[in-house]
Image (cartoon, rainbow, N blue to C red; front, side, top):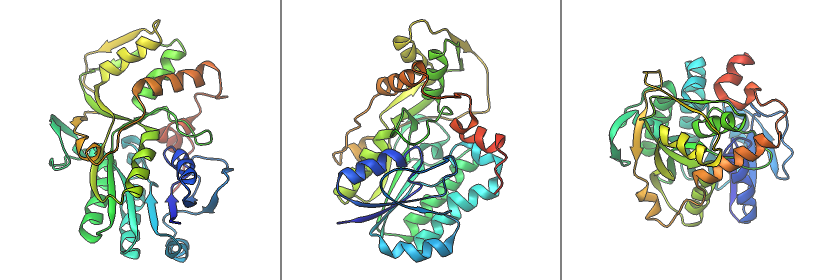
Amino acid sequence: MSKILVVGGAGYIGGFLTDELLKEGFDVTVYDNLLYEERFLKDTKFIYGDIRDREKLDKIVDDYDTIIWLAAIVGDGACAVDPFFTQSVNEDSVKWIVDRCPHKKIIFTSTCSVYGINNDLIGEDAEPNPLSVYARTKLLAEKYIISKHNNYLIFRLGTLFGTGDGYSRIRFDLVANLLTMKATLGMPITVNGGEQWRPLLHVKDVSTAIIFGIKNEINGLYNLSYDNYLIADIAKEIKEYIPETVVLYKDMSFEDLRNYRVKNNRYIEKGWVPQYTLEDGILDIKKIVEEKRLKNINDPVYSNEGFIKEKHVKF
């Protein structure tokens, strides 16, 4: 039985991934510092630890065949709070694990944000154009893996949406989730510009792609997305399911200038197919908000940048 270490396995992606790996019969251990969580009660092996703790990691990594590296500071705003810390987490820690584990399978989640601004429909061979600390550190980590390692699987993830497992936090700093939450609460949703493209991906489909890659022994670098959407069209689809939503369009420039559409055919041609749609994600968030399943929907923990700023997390 393959033994898998899921680094960052208590997070937004890792929660559902851990469940699915266990269902598939893998021997799974989660390694996490619970940055955004107050507890970890899932029935699986767990090691509390920071990815910068080389001594702790050094003692355990030899016990695993595959290392899934999800741990990161995610998002432009969150990474900008402390760029030096971001580098230590998103780049330096990845370089360490690559050097420490030259013969293990390493699965790494990167981001389509590495493309920055590009008006073409772009594949994995397009020239990256990172515009933020987040994108730059992820791209540098990618490049190090590719140059130093042979047995790797890297995914450049589209903008995530939806909900994962029943334990991990929800994120409201993602465009589809945020707009759905506001619409469900009866708030108008504002679309700044709206003509920016984003490749979208349901958070659960990160897990389906990773597990497909493990089972089929796939290596390489792949864009991972469900479909490309204009920001304005995300708002229109939300209005389909919450008809009373008021959508306000503002023709203005703003700090998030990312604009890119990606090809997802390279991984789909391997046999993987996304299973979850934008509709699934909208209805997931709508249900949670309508049923008041979150005691304080404005808690900064639901936003990476908001949590780090509001809680004055010190690194």
